[in-house]
Length: 339
Image (tube, rainbow, N blue to C red; front, top):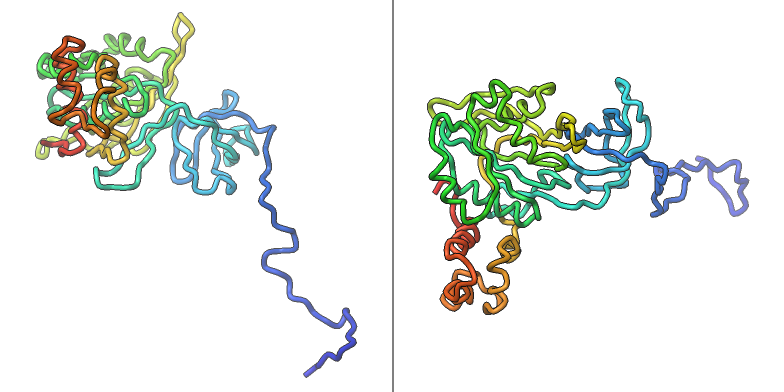
């Protein structure tokens, strides 16, 4: 066994290389000031498809982003191979500040929120009037999420050839939500969809709804050159089958006025949890009631005996139907969607 004395020759000593390498560690991250701007179109198992300078580029998230999620609608900074050629891979190094975030939780007890899309301008709640039957509680929940995220809601009622839209429209008339009523023939021949397309011009619109309500059929009618698979409603359960498995942003066809827009198709939802919603923010969508709420007791739920909104409405400052609608939306988190 070789032993080293006090005075050893450094050449005789073998030093095991460090697993971390000899490069000093630093918390300084590259700024990537020359990164190109991109728009996330879809996310699939860690691979993100982005629109970069008119080209479709496949990218992955850079390590310096850590656990920060990148979702459809995000505006990102991209480096690497931006040619969009087959088998090339770019890198997303920065996510720009979001103007809006639409979230949901699995249920009302789930502490983990899931971001559906970023930077959307409006939320189209797609609901069938029959086959499957409409579920007003889910509509209420989607409206609450839209108001909380600052999105403009749009109610799209499909399959009007199977049932009348009047009962549902009467329920949501006090909210002043814009709506469009369509039939299956409108989607089949492509006519009648222009009214919806015009409401989406210059906007990023995300479509949300149950499976089988005609959500993807609507998207196919809006963007006919990018058809997605559609399914049918199960005759036994009355529920639709999932055919859309991931969110996808599609550009609307150019118009004569020059205002393009984007429509984002999302997978059908079984539930829309609101555990992440700050309910006091919902009243911001009711400007005629918001002023009256300033006189409410601290932490008022707006459904209490001493709520100032009752007197505000009694004095003629707002329609009683508006207060009823607000309280219905605020209470929807405490009710199951099927109730």
